[in-house]
Amino acid sequence: MAHPIKEKDPTLKRRAGQAGVEANRKIRSKRFEISFTPEEWVALQQRASEAGASSTAIYARSVLLPSNHLADQETKAEHKLRVQLLASLGKIGSNINQIARSLNRMKMWNDTTKGMFQELAKIQEGVSTISQLFKEKK
Image (cartoon, rainbow, N blue to C red):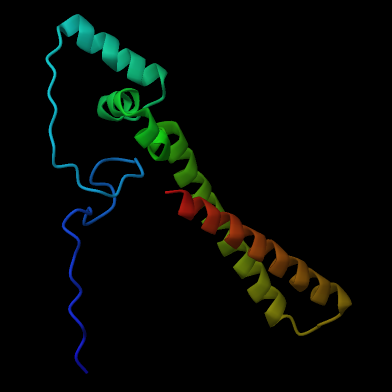
């Protein structure tokens, strides 16, 4: 069976993370340079840090193009928190699966174990929903 050849859009990044944690997916091919004194550079970096920007470039872009920057507002701290939350949710999901597996292996199946299994299924569904929402935030 022949597979259709998928053409890649040359204006889009090939992989995530090419430009840090921002939400932009398009390749930036135009360059804009400004020279700073050492004091100006330190001041710019300090302002970027105070604003919570993950890089000086992201901060400068947010100041120069504020309407375009709204989608790129995830800071380093927010990105780190999102990654940690996803990792924790994955561990919780794994623990729920282990408990469910143990319940399924029990020889005695009564109303209590059925109720526990149903509650675990609800919790697992909630964890999956939260995980999906955080993954979509990227």
